Amino acid sequence: MTKLSTMKNIGKELERKLKIININSSEDLIQVGSKETFLRLKMRFPEVCLVHLYALEGAIIDTEFNKLSEAAKKDLKDFSDEWK
Image (cartoon, rainbow, N blue to C red; front, side, top):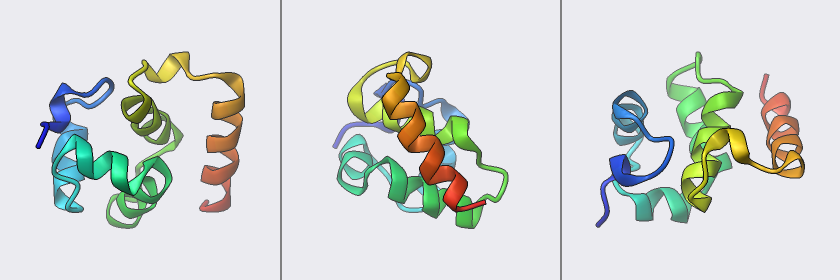
């Protein structure tokens, strides 16, 4: 079981929030996926925003959140907009 804090984009605060929603390892995050994890976070922490979704996706694919492709960002933004 790999610690969340070893993943890109996952700082102490995001790791704390992830653990509250029972995402306890990098394997958990990868299995659940960025979108479902984002929804779980959003339900528990309404202030969670698009940047968190970018961070989760970046963590899963091992890239900095600000280096996601434009296509990935558009897909994630469209998804996030559905839940506003």
